[in-house]
Length: 371
Image (tube, rainbow, N blue to C red; front, side, top):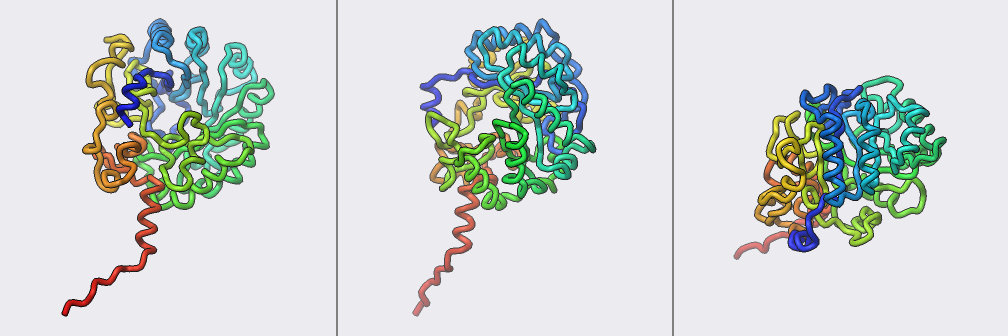
């Protein structure tokens, strides 16, 4: 599979840009431990230069993220520059600072969608977000988007507290006019590493994946988009990838192949979710745009080697023996690293849990008695 990606060509078609690490929440699941701004965040001119470089490299879709992106006051200028390059731009926000004036500005600039983080019904969401009243703030922000004819989306991080709420939560989102819903799993990095009791057990996938797949298959709104850490293979795989037009099946992590993550100080990663300084890691930092151009970082020999130079020898445990090993490559790199470090062995895999369950149900084979 990696040879096919090489032939297709590496280009940062999809980007997620952390405009600032500053945040007005301290969520239990936050992988980047957002809160305070980084000491060395890019200035406006540096950010605009980076926007120009993304345009020159053929970036097609970009999400403004954080921290909380609305805390960076010059975000509209950066967003406008990206849009001028023909990049489809969206935003992820916690909704605290959202109001009708913000919605009107977003519509005027031309952002394609705004996604708000909503992690279940009120008790589940506010436990994870640690702020009473925050659930209603999100609903109010969604309503504001709908009034201003902005595509309203929601991102939900699935954990042990909210995993049973998904079908009913979708009905709520439909009633508020939400059109897109991304669901992803909590991963034990950053703050979530300190709150592992919130994590689903790997075997919970046998319950959760069929529910997600069923929602993906029907025509109801909001349309469900499973994150790259949701899957893999088995009878539900095609439904989970129904939004992928070319090949509705998981074809491996694309970090550093077609996806790029940008930290607020100009550090470049293959995926913004991969751990770095806030988690005491530097192995996923490929360079910084203050020292090299984005093109130089992207095209550097040896860059993003965990994907671009993948071999099955990098896998361990069940993943190494799996029939899908060469295509899957261990699933989501973020998840495999969080669970096992450099050994790519992903317990949060539907096929793996399905096979283990089938082995437990199979009758024990009795060896013939010796003479």
